[in-house]
Length: 188
Image 1 (cartoon, helix red, strand yellow):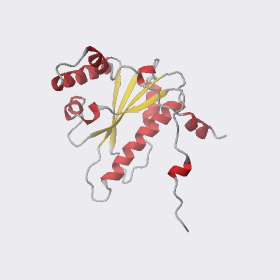
Image 2 (tube, rainbow, N blue to C red):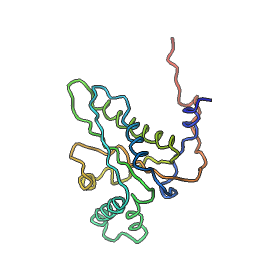
Image 3 (cartoon, rainbow, N blue to C red):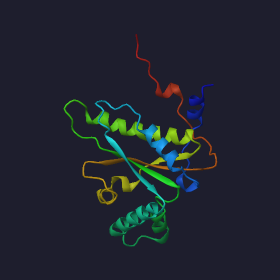
Image 4 (cartoon, rainbow, N blue to C red):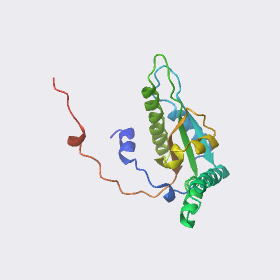
């Protein structure tokens, strides 16, 4: 069997809480991000970018998230507070994929958004090819304008995903839809 097909057939998304270190080295991260950026990109716009959370920056992002949650819910219980603090620090590395889709005279915004989604998938595949586990997560911070601004996004930018990368024990596959349920063949 082709190595790429075998890799894709084994791909799973373990919860970030199950991930441990070590995370990617600087060279591995550069490889992952380089591969992630090699996606279809109509017009060569690069309508996406990366925000890397590693080391203490992961804890700082969790503190920012907790601060905004407490603004909205001052009575947040201790378990929820801990969850927010650990939101970006469970895995050794988190890469935020930022969609910069914007109006363009030739390239529809939808194609730019899809390109950012392709970046997320390429990032996951590249991490897996290097022996890491990964999980594509959004969560409320991806949709909160205050949080996006606090991590350096400008008004028109959106979070396509926070990709958590680390090492995890193999997990069971979830049920996948049968092809008969998801494939339509257009008649000749």
